[in-house]
Length: 123
Image (tube, rainbow, N blue to C red; front, side, top):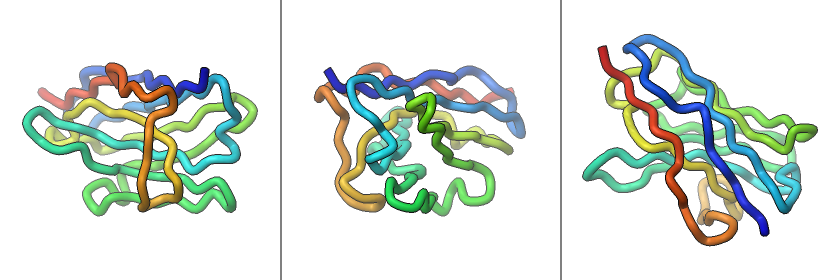
């Protein structure tokens, strides 16, 4: 069964860094646009970043431009989100998903969003 599983979250102080991983099983993510989304308590899920399948073009929400970097390692069937200069407002549960195309609709293979990975930025 196709799945995407997130990991790498944690508690970090403002200004700190984390690297999230999105590992695929049951399919080869090199052929898909993959993106990261986040959801803070009481807020709607929002797109954070996306990397296209065709040429590796990357996309970022304005709120994370210059601080976050998305990348993929096709050999490991994994997409990463390097998060630097973290701010308290980055606190959220982070999820990865397949995109039809970056900026478009997305879905979670297997249908369940699962627990994601929690990022907490606090002193």
